[in-house]
Every structure is written in structure tokens, then in C-alpha cells.
Length: 386
Ligand SMILES: Nc1ncnc2c1ncn2[C@@H]1O[C@H](COP(=O)(O)OP(=O)(O)OP(=O)(O)O)[C@@H](O)[C@H]1O
Ligand SMILES: [Mg+2]
Image 1 (tube, rainbow, N blue to C red):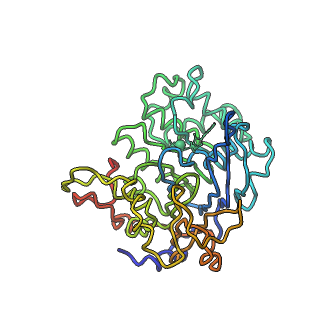
Image 2: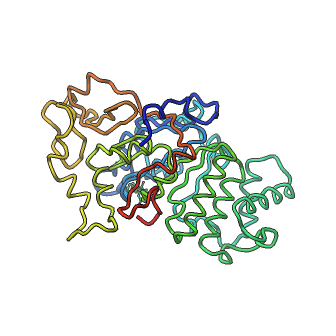
Image 3: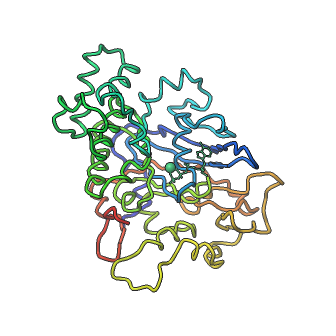
């Protein structure tokens, strides 16, 4: 494994000129009105940051708050029922949560674009592909209709749609699933965003198309100096594409580290469970280890120093909590340099005052080969079928 400490030095980063994150989320909490009973706390104090030309992967089980976090960046959660309870989302130093709807409209699709989890529902079936891409361009750029068409054609070419001159006047139903996903990407990229939010951009696609889409996003990232928040369930995709990984559970960040560090030494029991639950070829088992097996074994939570206990919502807090009633019981603790895990806010940790997760880490081409993601079959880097 590479020397992680040396790599997390920002001098190892490509020359993006970036000394500050492009996006910084701190203590974000978002809840939904449930009509009956208590509000659903979808996100409950999330922290992350993304530097220019960096890929931050957000992983975690269904319902843990990944999409709500991404949608919060663009204030796209329907409100009501959504409510932004606390926190800040700084983009180039401006808090997006404090912006008005007209100000947000300026940012959506221009500085920050999103590829949604369900491409089939995001394209309007009654308009041509060209009309839909051009609409986004005309909204954000001072160009004529014919110039917008030219930009749309270039965007379709960029994402590898064959015969773009003919395809641009067709309707979504005339495109295959993979091509519709490419159209979504073309639409997102036509305005040259600085940040792309890619919510499961390849889940609905077969493995070959999935790899092509991810390769495409990666190429465009380098060509355009774009930062990417990549939401995925697939640890193979993470191994191959991420610089930094944020693991979420129940609206909280439970682990945060660069991709090498996380795959080499996952520390939080949930992350360990996540890695253990992947079937490995060549390994005989009566039954797979599940995440519950790991998070339900008390010794998994007793491996760290005294007073440092991984946070887990199903457990009773440890006795030496430093929180007054109603206070935040969770703290993201920098357990070793540049590696954070979610812990209970005990008296021991209250004295430490960890810094926020912030990693100007970039994987280089040579490093990609070195991410250890051993599927038991000698394959490294993940093959997208986990
Ligand atoms: N519009 C909504 N109204 C009510 N609850 C919502 C709404 N959108 C999301 N939620 C709730 O917020 C929580 C987080 O949802 P979110 O969509 O962020 O999960 P996710 O991590 O993206 O999951 P998945 O991997 O399945 O996409 C869930 O409990 C979900 O039910
Ligand atoms: Mg989602």
C-alpha cells in the first residue's frame, strides 16, 4: 500500500490551484414532515467537503440520506415536507442554504449540475432530446438558439452519442437506457458545471455501459476540472473512481477517509460490516457475513482506546457521555491523521476537538492500480459487480 500520510499532503494533488474546498457541508440536518408522528430525520449532522477535480464517493445503505444530502446542495428537496433544520453548505464560500429561490436558479445547472438517480423520470417524454438540452443552456447562457443547438450537439458528441445531428431531434423513448443516461450527462455538462452531483449514475445500467458511463464522467472531470460527488452502493465503483470516501448511516457520517485508507483499514464496525458482507469468489461459507453480524458483536465496538466508542444508533450511549439532554450525541472524531469515524460524544472526545473532515487528496493514475479491493479472485480495483 502507498504511504497514506505522504499522499494526503495536498502537494501531491494535481495542480488545480485549490487550497480550499469547492464545497463544504457542515452539520447539515434535514427532516421531513411525516403527517403522522415524529418528523423523519433524513440527515442528522452530516459533514463533507469536495475540492476541485476531486471525486468524493458517498456510500451507505438505502435510506441513509445520500440523495437528500445531494438534493440539499441544490435545495431540491420538496419543502414542505422537507425542512433544513441546521447546518451550512458553503459553495465557493457562499452558504447555499441562505440563498433565495432566484439565486439558487442561477446556480442550478450552471455552477452545480446533478444527474438524478432515475433518468427515466427525469427526461420529459413529449420534448425532443435537443429541446431539453437547449432549454438548460438557454436558461443559463447568453446565447442564441442556433448557438445553443451547437452547444447541445457538442455535448451529445462529448458523451459519445452516435449520429448526434440525427439523434438531437429524437424523443427519449427512441433512446436505450444507457443512451438516456448519456443524454442526462450531456444535459448536466452542457453548462460546464464546477461540481457534478452524480446520484447512482450507473445503477440501472448493465455492467459494460456502467463502466463506459463512469469512464466518461472521469474523463470529463479531468478535461473540465470538475469536482464530483458520486453516490453509489457499489464498492467496486468506489475503489475505481473515488479519491475520498464518505460512509453514511442513518443520516450521519460514520467514516471518512481517502480511498486507500478506507479500503485498507476500515475502522467503524458498520464500514467493516459493509466490506465483509461482499461475497468473495473462492471463499467457501455456509452463509455470508452480514452487516448486522458485525454491528451486533459488542467486541467490534471495544477495539479502540478507552472513551472512544463508535457511534451506533441501536446501542445505548456509553456511560461517560459529555452531552446535556437534547445535545448532539455524535461526533466525527479524527481517529488518526486524515481518518475520521463517527463516535459517541464522550468526555474523552469532548477534550479532543477534532477538525472537520477535509481532505485535499487526489489519486494519481499510478495509484489506481494500487487500491486494494480484493474480491478473492485476485482482482484489484473492483470490477463493478459487487
Ligand atoms: N420527499 C420525501 N418525503 C418524506 N421522506 C423522504 C423524502 N425523501 C426522502 N425521504 C426520507 O429520507 C430518508 C433518506 O432518503 P434518501 O433518499 O436520501 O436515501 P438514500 O440514501 O439516497 O437511499 P437510496 O440508496 O435508496 O437511494 C429516507 O428515510 C427517506 O424515506
Ligand atoms: Mg438515493
